[in-house]
Length: 263
Image (cartoon, rainbow, N blue to C red; front, side, top):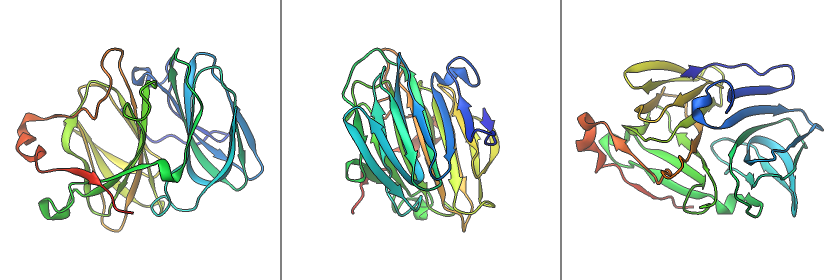
């Protein structure tokens, strides 16, 4: 599934709902535009929630946390993300016009609220120097099973350099995944390959990848691409950096390494 949703009159863009659109993603995912001075609350009695600041200046508040965060650039600034367990009230206040992503899923576990600040982000670079550097990309992992073993979700970002491929080598995993794409310029474009089908990536578009579907992306020269990637662990089968590579491209897989990114 690939889509080009618009923000509604309330400033919400829905990508998936557990009981609605793209329900096979097993997550509630929405993008919100907040106006300067606007406040928005989030609460789920039985779901964990993550709120990611994409761009702007906001204040995160939940239980013991009440802290401002700012992000002026998709590519030059690192993200900030709030993660809470079920039955936790979140308040977001916009100090400037801002964009956030809301991700939630069922989870009965109790855990302490956590604000992932810029210094907490796990930064890696992948495929650097391989294939004439045509698949190099920068990855910001916010949380996964390694640093949030109690969560049923994963969230991170890819910063794709202009003219490069990413989510490469073509691969799949049993766990469902959602991508949300942005460009700094509205005419930016790229292509997403889901299985054997190709889709045009535009600013604000998204892709939903069912378990077992291969996926890979490329962005046009002159247009670096920003992406938020969100995965739902399966019961008894969590995503552990799982990559099942299409056998036709298996000879490439060992060449692409993920290494820590220097500050």
